[in-house]
Image: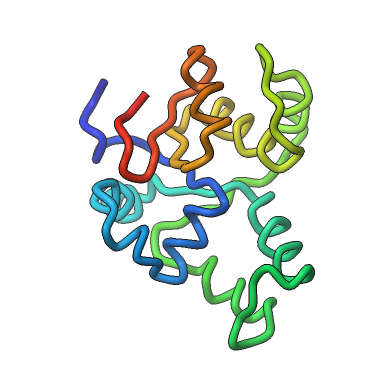
Length: 148
């Protein structure tokens, strides 16, 4: 496969959050250079379902922000080089008809379908998604893990 720093990347919601808040998991990650390179090349994206997930986490008290969530999201999603991919009919269909046996929730299915539909390398720490990828259904890279 081509150099990791030449790949078009899709960030899973937790990786997007780690990047946006400057989490030590991102600062210390060997994949940080690839993510920064993708941002510089306009090849870094996240699924719009991540906005729903972040909003739901904040609503249920899992996340707290120092400013109103809508303002935080506006600033965060305006990060240089980050492009949000909408959930369109093609992704909706792909999420409902994923091949193989994927037991992920609705948001995970949308993220996996987005990566497959847009031919993106999915950056995730989710072991369920990595197990699914091991069957050849998509390409993933983990935070601190080897490419699959």
